[in-house]
Length: 107
Picture 1 (cartoon, rainbow, N blue to C red):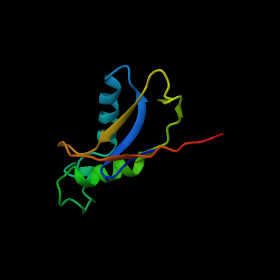
Picture 2: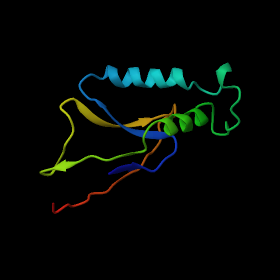
Picture 3: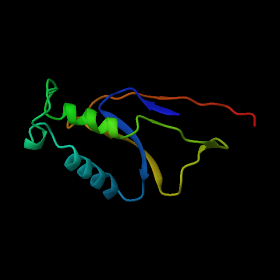
């Protein structure tokens, strides 16, 4: 299990072969939940940390903050094209922490 300890970023499993996938996903979510300065977001009141703060919380509420990934013979059992991404929802870089928990099964 991977868990991100933040409320304005997410963890996702997505295509890892073409970097345009990351760009397109970021653009989609930017259009879905634009910054607070966009007129469509005028209802937002939590803007103390900037126009990207509350939209980042909304995006994190829509996407996973934890992932469960099977480990087979010591390797993550991801698909051929899959990769794990920390999806940052804030405009400027932030220091982020994730926690990994490994469970051992005897079955």
